[in-house]
Length: 170
Figure 1 (tube, helix red, strand yellow):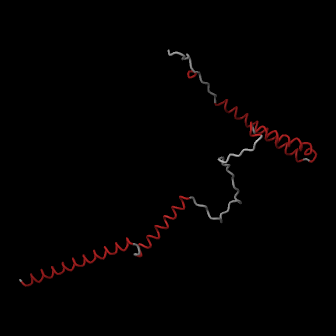
Figure 2 (cartoon, rainbow, N blue to C red):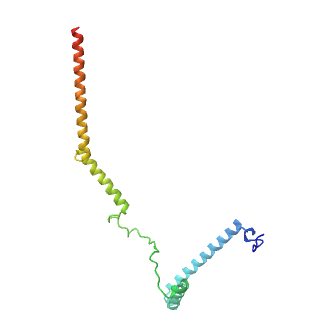
């Protein structure tokens, strides 16, 4: 055994598992607690709605709000207001706040993709009209090929005529 090694490390400990019944019982207890809290909050809201009790709870509610805020903030956070600029707080928008009339802001990639598509369409229109350099070269090649084919067709016809005249004279 190496020097300093302890016999019986932490890895061989016996593991305990909670049974499904225990988990269900814990979940039921939590639901009951939440329901009781909701009922107490509702009772408190009804009590605050009364004019007489509102005066009594008015000063106490302010103190409790201050205490809650102090409990939530720990350490230096209670003294200094700190906002993390990197932390993004997602705010849900209501349907009435969403403006559909306003144009959608496109990302850089989307804008570039649209520009590429528009440029390609413009190029194809100009190409079909024969205004691009490539289209002019293609049309010149086509003219040369047509001329060669016409010459080859004429030669074949002349050979056929000469062969037909040669046979007719024999």
